[in-house]
Length: 245
Ligand code: FPP
Image: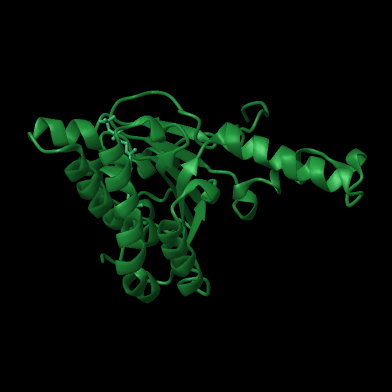
């Protein structure tokens, strides 16, 4: 790992929370004449590099979109391949994540995952729970609308059981019920592969996020490329609805 980060060199400010839509694995594989799952494997390797770069650049929270509520529509073999990847990486990465002080958490609806997949995820979460250098949140079977609907259900249930006063529900109270209740809102949302849409990722949470859409396919998204995105973020003027100074 290098000692001096790109943001320190440029004098800019690092985003506390970066969220990434890791897109383009399939196209990357196709261009190389490989099966799609090889693109996902290459993508998982790239994620390791981006996690390390995040630590180096002082990012506190990194959230990545690994499987959406809509991704079940892919072929059975691709879905199975991805699930195997999540399970295998959850097991194989624990030591390295621990030695780098990285805590892993998962968001998304686990109730639809195979037991052996969510058990491996739960194990990794507890194995890394005391780490505090970076919180890596992996979204699996996650959809922004589903997150909001499940939060509404929790609130409705609590109100019906007399546990909460509906008059107390406001934005903050509602947001605390999301899967992301433990996270601050993302400062920067990055999407690779040239697509310019949010695809049901952190739709509520990214209300005031900055967006970076980059053409690079995810398996080619190097730490250097990531650092150019961070550098460009550090020059943006974020006003959160206020007038320019
Ligand atoms: C989108 O590319 C990518 C995904 C749906 C899967 C992302 C998963 C990884 C990068 C692996 C992460 C691994 C772990 C262990 C968390 P796409 O398949 O939609 O690409 P395409 O648009 O080119 O077809």
